[in-house]
Image (cartoon, rainbow, N blue to C red; front, side):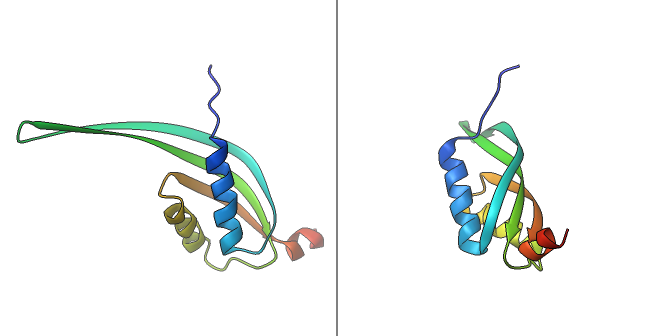
Amino acid sequence: MRKQSIPKKYLKDLVQVICSILDVHSIYFIGAQHENTFSSYIFDKQKKSSKRHNYGITIIIISKEYVAEPKHFINKVFTKLGQKIKIYPILYTTNEVNYS
């Protein structure tokens, strides 16, 4: 099996976007998936096609603030990254981590 990695530029952009939204203590990458999609359309004898590379990343985010609406946070990150990276975050605050 060939190993696919997420481009470093995407990871850098992801970290920057997350840090712009939250006061982050640390981020841990757990796993990732890569999906290629190809679409072809024929309208009035014109053929159009598109190719997309999408990524999904599972991460642990430890932030200094509580994320009250994780769904809104996920959508905000997805939108700011041009809908190329979908995150599946496991969210903790520093208080929750220190308490354990």
